[in-house]
Image (tube, rainbow, N blue to C red; front, side):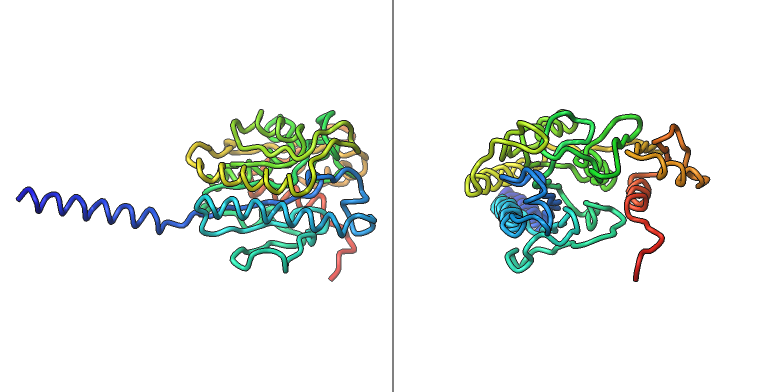
Length: 298
């Protein structure tokens, strides 16, 4: 009788272990470019810049380093979002064959398109500080040309904070971020002890002391591995519904015209307020106000 009981216990333990090993561990990676190693000005960040082609390589290599670290730590599936500029920066032929890639715009979930409740964690690569932060390379939120501030429930947020709230809607925690020292500090102050890979140290809006590319890849790979290895330590960043979003424009006409909509309140000459039922609705609204133009084609 005793031996049969032991056999039954061993069988149950084997079943639990096998199921745990077979359970998918999906990781979402959102990649920006301002926080990539060495990036400091427009010359690295857009197709017109003389260094853009090289920095697409660096961005792709940083994403690949995060992918490698995540897989080593047990990730089974990875989705990558190309979330900078035109959304067509990552060199698709240099990404692993076993990942999926989100490209171009518009997207209902913006920099988090493709995330859902099946993911175990989110990683932010190449991120930067908020437009209200006096520190950080290329500090801005969503649009450096148009927006002066974005607030969720009265608190100014960075793109990392905004995207963490979108992930939190799906009960997905942010587990790691890479970029300059300012964005790592800013994000950890909001989200807690997420893994942070500092690849450069900001000395101004357009200047920084930086690691060399290979050093950044090693650091990001290690931080991603650590983050996935202790994924149970992280909690989603969740905002209670409804969610009020306040947007301040650098010019007055966008707020004037958007104020014509019954769902929008114009709160001052440059600012509007919208209340969404959840972060998905807020994300769609933000994507609309920075994307829509009457002459959109096709």
